[in-house]
Length: 219
Image 1 (tube, one colour):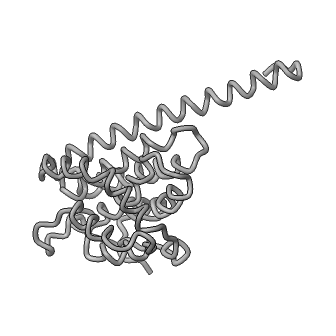
Image 2 (cartoon, rainbow, N blue to C red):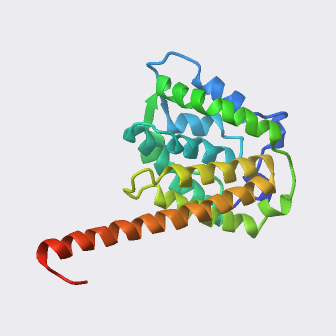
């Protein structure tokens, strides 16, 4: 049975000294490009780290213009991890997901695209408004991340970039105990939901309009 976590376990694990996520990701990406990196490998590398770091690793690739298969590999774990954040549980993923993998070369490309932005974020983030990352507010952040993770699976053109970006910002805020970043990410999440909702309604309205004109129906 999954264990619950403390407030501190949603943020950075201070037992590792000066931990920089960008440095750890670069280390994971090193090696022969034809080798494969599984989701289980990433979990093992971050076993002593924060749930926020795990969520970031699986959210940020979905925000990039990558092939559909790569996005699916990283998108599925988000549903489990964000639900666990909402429920205050320790990170855990089923074997069906941990066995998924991608080539190290593909992972290296992802890290290469993310690294400059992650370096900048790490340079400006700092502990502030830390109450935002504590219970019960952190559960609300988890709920927002879970809703956004569900949206990522909807077949909406370019509908995954803003939700994934919002989840990435919230997770970095959790990792650095930066409440300002968490609030910015939450606001971005609200905006993403509004936009996606509007696009869905537009698609439904357009479909009804076409059907009405073709078959002479009125809705």
